[in-house]
Image: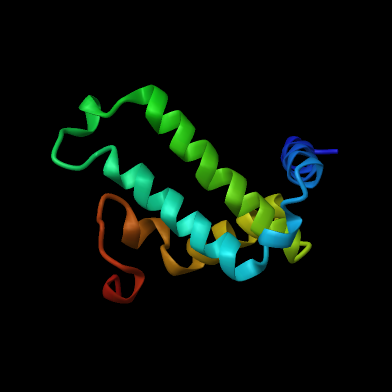
Length: 110
């Protein structure tokens, strides 16, 4: 079992012990993920990045990962596999010789 699978299993156990699966439909998991991402962003609002509270950042980032992993679990997606597939897609969209050192979107590189 991979680390990601182990973490997902722990999240599912935590959820199931509390009978929360009834609330974890795909729509609400996606909404929760977005809300937690917004809370993560709020840590940086009106301050320099280095001034963000690292302890709060860890908590919010953990919430983002948790809801993302639970959403992937709902669709029986392998998190490691879908990330690796996305890296390959991005490698095609952002060839090193065109993308190195630029923040241009892939459709602006050519």
